[in-house]
Image: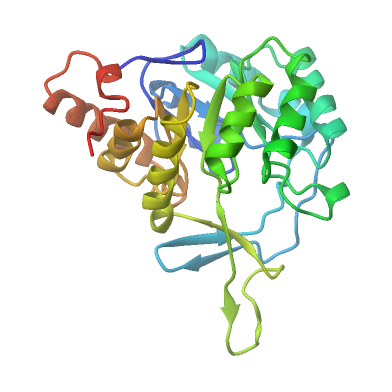
Amino acid sequence: MAVDVAGVPMKNPINTAAGTYGFGWQYEGFYDVSQLGAITTKGCAAEPWQGNPAPRMTEICSGTMNSVGLQNPGVRGLVEQSGEYLQGLRDKGTAVICQVAGHSVDEYVRAVELFEELAPFASALEINISCPNIAAGGCAMGSTPDGASEVIRAVRGRTKRPLFVKMAPERVVDVARALEDAGADALTLINSVPGMAINVHTRKSKLSRPTGGMSGPALHPIAVRMVWEVHNAVKLPIVGVGGVMSGEDAAEFILAGATSVSVGMSNLVDPTSAPRILGELTEWAESQGVRDINELIGAFDG
């Protein structure tokens, strides 16, 4: 079941999606987190962010919508609060992927430099280019090939660690090609899809802001399609994210071209879902009559 994502060895393909898993230790009361191939920590910026006011999350048909605003303790806070645990987790053979957030290119650079200086436990950095670009009026940094590649070119020389990129669900093929040219090592897709949920009685948003990010099973077929498109367009390894609730959901991503699969909203529905999904994925792989799960990556035949 072992895979390798851009030089990051994982004992199995199961990862966790940033923002749904805290910093790992929150789940230790449910199971031994070190059985997972990797975890991806909540996105952190150079300085702490307070995030958006409540309400931040609402249920929707077949999923949830959130507007958390990437509240985080900053890189220093992450290291102080969770660094010892994360180092121990990596020592047990689970890769620790630290997500990086920023509202400008300079903020991304500062955050990457801090991770490089303070976080020896980080196996790789995942650059979340879906953050709103304040200088550009709030559009996602990664919504265009030029915007996405500008961020990666700026941070590429600031770290020796592999750079994963968390992509917005927009123009994924064009953006993926630009990221490959800019020096990205792996791609994580997709991030949540923008949506709206209106309380028809109050005529106000069910969140503190008009729009939020949709996640959950409703997104899964969209995410699988985008993983397949990007797999056929670039040579970079892919981490598939979006509505993974079962081992068969994870298997779809692998057949579409993902090397690793992240469990997201399912962690909030059932905190023991990641190891369950790992078990189901392992059973599926065994049923396919192969000796190595890598033989199944991209094996979709139309």
